[in-house]
Image (cartoon, helix red, strand yellow):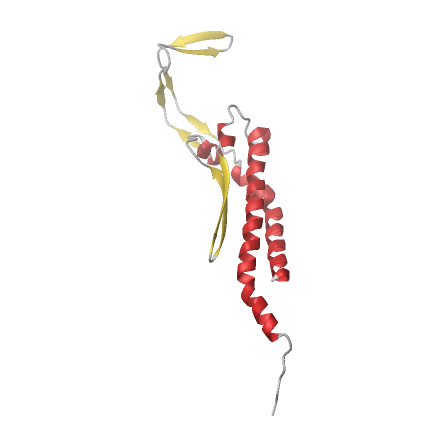
Length: 162
């Protein structure tokens, strides 16, 4: 007859059972930290001259980070929220259609061409081709190694403390 006696089986089983909750907590905390860092990189580098130059700060102000933890994982997202109409076309590029520009606050538009100021009741804009100026995806690419290392470290720390 063969008999096997395992020391520490109960402790190992308890550790394994506690690992999913510890892992989710550790990954959630690390994802929150990394998402905030990514949003800061977008605001303070990519939208401050790294990719786009800030005019009003509206796009930078619209950048948010959020983390959602669920039973099957942790989801972190960084993006533009709100009514910033040009956010997507700057990120991905695209075309605007021809359109008429009319004055909003007065009876005429005022603009400078060369050294001369001009006035018009309306202007026919021919449309534009906007090149891709990725501020979100390029920031994610810049932080990919840091994000992967941070999540791996969080998982290892969770295992050690479980």
